Amino acid sequence: MRYIKRFWKVASDRCKTYTIGALVLLIIFVGIDIYEFTLNNKAETEIENTANSVFDSLVQEIESMDMQTQEIMEPFKDMIVSY
Image (cartoon, rainbow, N blue to C red; front, side, top):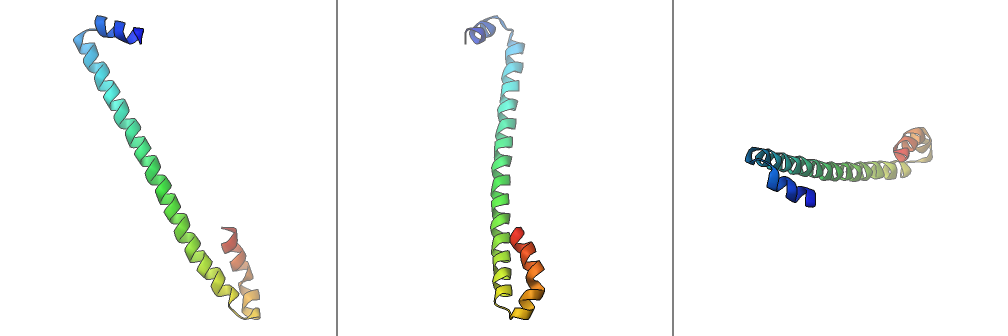
């Protein structure tokens, strides 16, 4: 803190302006990164939920088939469940 106070006392107006500008840009970029991170997390969650609902219905459909069809569809079901 002492360093900042001394800098503010000694620095020229131009240097203070550039310092404030750099700090504002830094805060803006950090804010954009945080916003992008939250959007990515929301999108991933939505994609997982959609995929789970689609795949769950497919698994239920396969399980409701007769035995012979279930045996044919078993590799497909394993592929869905492993996702």
